[in-house]
Every structure is written in C-alpha cells, then in structure tokens.
Amino acid sequence: MDGASPVARKEADVAVTVSAQAAAHVQETDIPYSIACSVPSSPSGLHLGACASIVRMATEVSLDTHHHGATAEAPQLLSQTGHPTLTISTEEPWRDRRFDHLKTFSSGSRVERQVSTLHPPAEIEVADSKISEEEEEETGDGDGDGDSENEVPSVDRYFSALQGRELETLRATEVSTLPDGETWPFLLRFPVSAFGMCLGVSSQAMLWKSLQSEPSMAFLHVSPAVNQALWWVSVALTAFVSSVYLLKAVFYFEVVRREFCNPIRVNFFFAPWVACLFLVNGLPRPVAAIHDSHVVWYVLMTPILLLDLKIYGQWMSGGGRRLSKVANPTSHLAIVGALLGALVGLHEAPLFFFAVGLAHYVVLFVTLYQWLGTNDVRLPKELHPVFFLFVAVPSVASMAWARLCGEFGFGAKIPYFISLFLFVSLVVRINLFFRGIRFSLAWWAYTFPMTSVAIATTMYASSVNSLVSRVLAIGLAGIASVTVTGVLVTTMYHAFVRKDLFPNDVSIAIMQRLNKPKHAVAQLARCIL
Image (cartoon, rainbow, N blue to C red):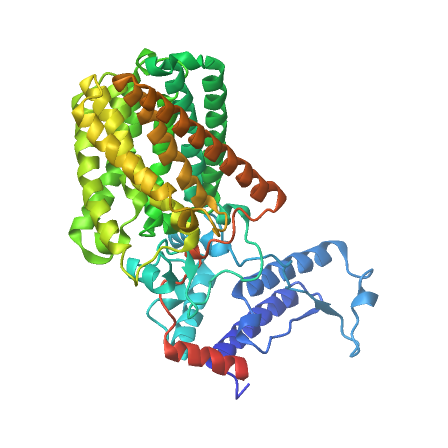
C-alpha cells in the first residue's frame, strides 16, 4: 500500500472502516462470524455505493442468523483456519452504461444530476466528493472537463469538431464519446431532419388538391379520392415521425438539446410546424371551412415566429452563429405561413410573415450564392439536393401573394418566374445533382421544391390560360409526383431492407472541449502503470 496512489489509499481506508463497522455489529449480536471483503488494486474497482451495500447486507445476515440460528449453515462457512467466514460478493450485474449520459433519466444524465443535488446521500456524498477532488488533483483536470460528455458543446466546438457544410462528419483529430464500430440505439440515430419526409408527402396532397380545384386543370377530371388518400398518408407519416421524435425527447432529451444547439441542425426544427401547415393546406375540404381556422393558424405560427426571432436575431448579433458561418437553405421556410394565413382569410399577419420571410430569403440567397461558389467552400455531394430548397421560397411567395391579392398578378408572377428559372437551371445539371449521390434523407430536399413549383404553375395556368401553361403545369406535376414516389420507395427500401437509412449521428457524439494535454498524459501514464 505504500506505493499506491492517494485515491487507492483513500478507498482502502473507507473499505476497512466499513468492514470494521460491520464486524463490530456482528460482535454485538454474539455471533462468531466475520466478514471478508477484498480491496481491489485499482481505484476504479471500488465503489462507495458497493461498500454501503456490504454494511446493509451484513446487518441483514447477522439479524437473520440471530433469530433463526446458524447451525445449518455453519459447515458450509468454515474456513481453513476453523473460523466461520461469511463472504459477500459486491459485483453488480453488467449493464451497458455507455449511453447513460445522453438519457433523460439515468445515473449520468443532466436531469438525474439536478435531482441528486436536491437530495444527496448523507454518508456517501461527502466521501465521493473528496475522492473526486483527489482525482482532479491527480489528473490536473479540475476545471470541468470531466463533465464534457454531459454538457452541450459551444458553437465554435461544433465547427472545430465536425466538418462538411452540414457539420455531418467527425474530423480525424476527434474522438467520439459514443462507441465506434457498432450501431447505436434507434432513437439516437433518428434526426430531426426526418421531418423532411413529411414535407415531401404532404406537399403532394396540396398538389393534387390544386389539380382538382384549379379551373385550368378541370379537363383532367382528377378524383377527390386521390387528394384524400395522399392526405391521410401524410397524416399517418407525420404522426409516426412526430411520435418517434417525441420518444427521443422523452428518453434522450440531451440529444435533442444537442441538435437544437447545433448551428446547422437547428434550422430543421422549422420542419414539424411547416409540415402541419402543409397538412392544413392540403385538407380535402376548403381551408376556410375549418372551425376556428384562425386559431389553428396562430397556434402553428407561434413556434415558427419564435424560431425566426432566435435564428434571424443571431445572424445580426454576430458571434459563432453569424450568417457567414451558419447560412443554410433550410432557414427560409417560414414564408409558407403567409400562404395558409391568406387561405384562412387573414391579411395583416400573413403579410407580416411574407415580408419577413422574403427579406431574409434575399439576404440568405445572396450569401449562399457567393459563398458556395468559392473554391474552398463546397457542399458534400450527398447534400447537393439541398440546392433545390432555393426554388421553394419564390414559388411559395408567388402563391402567397396571389392569395393575399386575390389574383395572380405581376407581384406573384415575378417570384414565380424566378423559381421557374432556378428550377430549370438546377435540373439540367444532371451530373452534378443526380448522378453518383449516395442516398440519404437529404434526397427529400428534391420533393418539396419540385412540388411547390408545380402548384404555382397550376395557379399561373389558371391566370394565363394558354396551352403552354397547361402543358407546363402537367409536366411539372408529373415530375414532382414521380420524384416523390421514387424517393419514398427508396426510403422504404433503405429503411426496411438494407436498414441503413439512419446511420450513427456523429454530431451528437462530440465532447464539450478537447482534453488538455496534461490530462491525456495522465491517462496514458495510468494505462502504462
């Protein structure tokens, strides 16, 4: 014991004290039994909670032998020295604790730590704090690095630990806090970007409702059953994705916090509310006929407004979340609320969201247009589909302006032609956007923009009423429907057949900060010794 570390000596003293107390208790009951417990050689092999359990178990055994006698068990407990010995094992059943620091309710979670600070164990807490202090002094890491797995990393830490335009890849110099080489629990791998599936399918319900109701498309004789079927499929998909993500928030709230604090991933928190707006827009009956439709619109737009205030405000305040670092095409979908507000009969509030959304879209479009064109900043090939989100806002803006004004006039045609030009300029680049791209959830970025352009074209055809406009509307509607169907089938194939739709999300597995060099040296020395 002379060459042992201070932590090992401290734990040994605690174990001996506990054993002595247990032995004294046995002597008081006049039972000639002793308790033998071994002290591990490594500091990590002894837990004070286990020592407390020894005292409790020893008390129970001694009381039981006092009342019922110990003659029947005595032959089995005799040691080589002739004295009866009772050996108690303190080993707990093995349980995988590698993900506990991300769980909502576990010994390593943030919630459990807050609860434990309100009701700390009286006897164990003091000794545990002393040992933790000695460990910090020994390792030279007393400034909170030990809690790096339990705290949300800073914005700069996300950029330093991850790479890629969407911060989706761990840098080679980083070490994941979660195990590599194996599949993590499903809820950990289910990202908030999965709501993109809801946007794509629910926008199809809006498209087929437009093909059914627009005067320019009356010659197609589209059955209302198509819109109803797509709407119910959209409701089921949205309910499923929402339920799964709600379970993730319940059981792995720390992961949701990390996604929300991620400067890129936070933009996808618009998606659940925009998907609900699409469901209301695609309702088989007229939106204005919904009871308390104004209340529905205000309920759905409130979280969107709060996210706008957070994200757009951070763009202007600078720091780690300034626009030049966190610009993302998913940041400008809030303008969809203006379209639904016009449909339910509102005017001023939808016009407010229209102005805010369009102004920030112009700023974001110019930033990304210059930024992504440089040689040193490129989107990974798997994320090229997000370019199509540039098409969504002007097409939705044209529809919203037409609903607000009551006609598809010049104010609506200008953003519509912008969206049509952007769509054609992207589609013709087949090698860049459609070939050699590994399938992922980012492919759903193809669906909603294509569908929004098709819906805007049906409204434009009703205003212009020409053969070219009708053919264009039918062609774009067909392309959008085939695209959504193909992406949906491919998604199901990768989800249920290949089972690789949701890979490990490394963005949630970064430490709050890098370990200090002296901490790393101390860990290496401990491993060697």
